[in-house]
Each structure stands twice: as C-alpha cells, then as structure tokens.
Image (cartoon, rainbow, N blue to C red; front, side):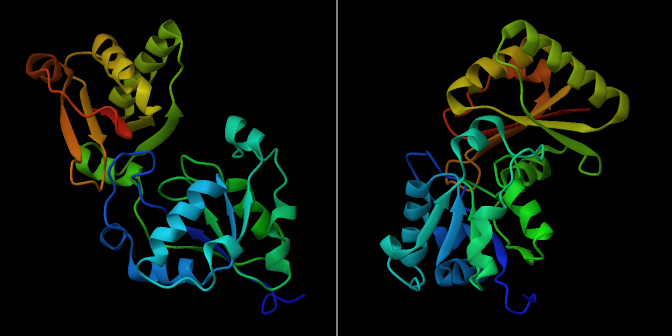
Length: 255
C-alpha cells in the first residue's frame, strides 16, 4: 500500500482546562484549522474516550462534526500506558493504527495540550513512522511552552523532567539536584505535579531551593483566572503569594 492510500496521523491538541471547574471558549484557545481538521476526523486514539467525546462535543459547537459523537471510532490507549507511560518504546501501538492503513485519517488526542508531550502518545507516533504513515502535528496550546515563555528563565536551554518523587526525602534530593544543574549550566528545569499535590510541592521547593534561585509558577494557563509569578525564592518567601494551586500548574526553576 502506498502513502497515497494510507491515512494520516494528526496530533490534535486539546484545551488546557481538563479537570477545571471553568473552561475557556474553545475558539479562543484553539486555531480554526485545528478545529476544522478535528471536526472531520472519524477515528481517534486517546487516553480517555469519555473526555475525548466531551472535547469533540465542544468542537462540534463551533464546527459541525462529520458524524455524531456516538458514531466516532474512539480507541483508548491501554491502562498500563497511562500508568507507566509509553515514551520508553516498550509498547507496540501498531495495531491501533489499522484504520490508517485502511485509508482513514486518525486523530491522536491527550487529556490536555499536545499529545505525546507530558502525556501518553509517543508510542502511537513511533508506530506511525514505522508503518509509513504521515504524522502531522496541529497547532494548539501547550502548557510547558506557555509557562516557559512567561517565566523569564532561559528559553534557549531547558529540560522537561516530568514529575518529581512523592517521597519527601527523595523529592528534596531531586529538587536540589535539578537546582544544581540549573545554576551550573543555565538550563531551565520544568516539571509538573497532580493538582492536589501542588501545594506540597511548592512548600518543598521553598524549603529546598537556595534564596537566589528563581522559581516561576504558572497556574490555569489560557483560563481567565490564569496566574503566573516568577521571582527568587527569597522574594517568594517574603511576599507569600497565594497561587491557585488547585488548577493545572507548571513549575520552572532556573537562574
């Protein structure tokens, strides 16, 4: 089968308000072309079918879907991919792309932001390349880049390190190691946490980081209540701001 007969894999970004009580109008945070392509697709691979249907209903309120949401072919990634991730190459996602080999375009969707970045999906992208399926990343919101741009930290050299350890001792050691790397190399360190653990992470950061280290926090990006602050740790301790840590939050550490 030639590439002309094979469908494409579209990486379809989702709004950043997943799990939030409030949401931004989808047409305000998603480019029109992305909404148009999402609306015409009939096959999707995703983290969670329920949330993907909810997202596509929002798309359908702006641009008519090619078919009713209930008729869309939506396939979830396996549960072990959610728990352990699929960025290491251990999961074979090729069977999930049969529809593309049959000539149908497929959309890859995560819970929020760009699939395969800070979310599962990289195995699907790898499989598409291995099968000769064209991969097209669509434009949309990405919290890591929005937070980095808003931080005032080094945007020329940075690393996303995912989640920090939950154990308090291990987390403190990890924070200090990341700080040492940031101060030595100038490389901004970016990480995230589950919202209900954000307050504990902020407290750990203020305890472990040096006073002159710069800490930037962005909460609820793209929402009307979006909140960003970038300051030295000493300034954080002095001002004692109250960020809305119940919202999805990105943390950046640097100099």
